[in-house]
Image 1 (cartoon, rainbow, N blue to C red):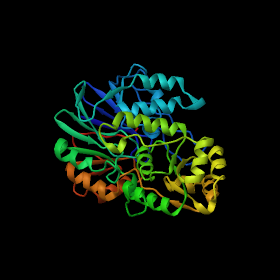
Image 2: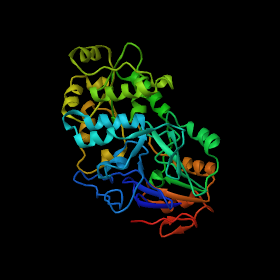
Image 3: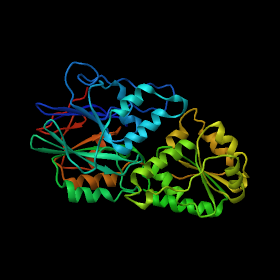
Length: 399
């Protein structure tokens, strides 16, 4: 088994990793690079056999729907099959169809995606893949157990243990995976300042307190951070309104249609879209409104008494503090704002926990801008060669 990391060993985002045997070659993720620069354009990934005809690729697998993992989907040759979770496919399709920005070519490619089933192994050539649905700030995120050539590799994808489904990780590791030879893990948080990890349930409790303190609670969060939208919508007491835009409501319904049979948490909450009658009811009764930084919501927020209002910032703080950000001005609309956020990525302690559970000989960090710091989490398990951790049976090269 060979592993070739095309991008993602020394940066957060822009992920692409290749696994191959003598007869089969697959790619995991094909993402855009991330940048806070509004004029930044991600460098195109050129991978022989994937983006051109100079070689063969049997399939591309997506761990989840975030753009830093799927953003270069259209560069994949059309005859190469793509696999993803069924709900992730739905969300990608809705995103591509959104508003007047519909991307016809992307919509057609998304329709060809083949959905795998959580926990059910499938073969691509002589490589066996078992996808496991885990917790991340994107619904329907997966890690993969890859088995080939007598070796077992666990590819974590993006994950965390402090989300609403964080407890599934230990069950999967204990009951379905056990010991592996290699772990390829994300390491997003190892370079960030230490902060106390709060759970999504903690955020829900705080919103309940804000709803008792303020008549109007506005929340700015990522539209596709759907577990958070479900959790906060469920914090709204009976008799008060919960409002979001049409696109968010559509996404929530798609998740509910897919997952409400699995957990009551995903039963469709009572959500309204902003219209004259609904806004009048919100004016009278109060409640919670999910907002976005645009003129429509700016006009709406200005209709309500700022002394009775709070705007909760529920996103990564880098978006707020980047140069030329318009978020600070938006947050000032209510006079009072507060942070209400937790990371979509595992804390250093939780990274260590997963590594110890899987008990690999080798740990290879990805999705991190400080791979060398992973050594403190997995001592006596790795050999550092050129900034990457490699084993005697897996060759790793950076292109």
